[in-house]
Image 1 (cartoon, helix red, strand yellow):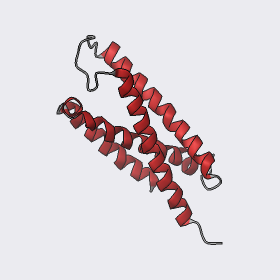
Image 2 (cartoon, one colour):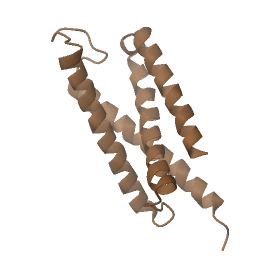
Image 3 (tube, helix red, strand yellow):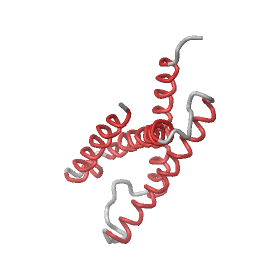
Image 4 (tube, one colour):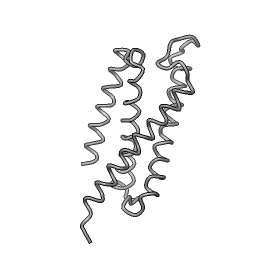
Length: 141
């Protein structure tokens, strides 16, 4: 079930991203980046649960809520940082954007921190949904 959700979710994110670039929504609607990072952070958190809990069974979210938050948000933060590096290198070295080229957000540092925060908020939302799903699916004592 989670594998299908991840596939559908990444297809939605991918389609929205392609449309955002093709239609210049990132530049026209400055807020468009926010839901993309919220969804991305949620997707990465769900990917963690799929890979490390369901697929390889090396993590058990049922044991400790605080530990789950720390580990999963650490994973989301790592992917978020790598994504921001990818965006920077893509813009600088692959797209060869000159320094004065308009970007979706002119202040690189503020945008990066906002993106990082939105990834973590999206990840936290997915953790909460996952945790309550687990609690609901546990048999009563």
